[in-house]
Image (cartoon, rainbow, N blue to C red; front, side, top):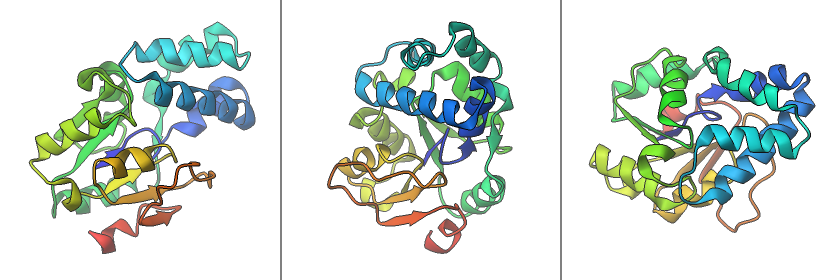
Length: 198
């Protein structure tokens, strides 16, 4: 089970391009992550993008530009290879805090047709609430302890572990761990080790 926008896709780069610099994009993206992880029950995802832009002093139009350019998000170099090999061996799912509409666009950028995609909009809650993870487990018909969750940001680690999944943290951006006591079983700055773990 994968996070979408940071574990499989390099959404950091797109935010930087729209913001005007990598640092501005990073600040905006960190604020957006904070807002989604604090949101709890679902409220429109696109509104959170706009709110986070405002909070870091980003012009409102930049948020709308980001939404318009969502289809430019790029997968990490090994994403397609890893997904293709894993789908041959095990069921694969994506759980994302994205809206349904933007998730469809983002999933298409992986180059792989993914049969199970759960959005916060569909689940009614944003991660790290347990509902999105549990909905994906139900769709996969798998017990949590038999599913590795591939997190892309530190706040996903305690959320996934809270429902009983071991976690592989794809820490491409070398972010600091969450202040929670939850420790991922695996940490890597590439997805490739998954091919030997699964």
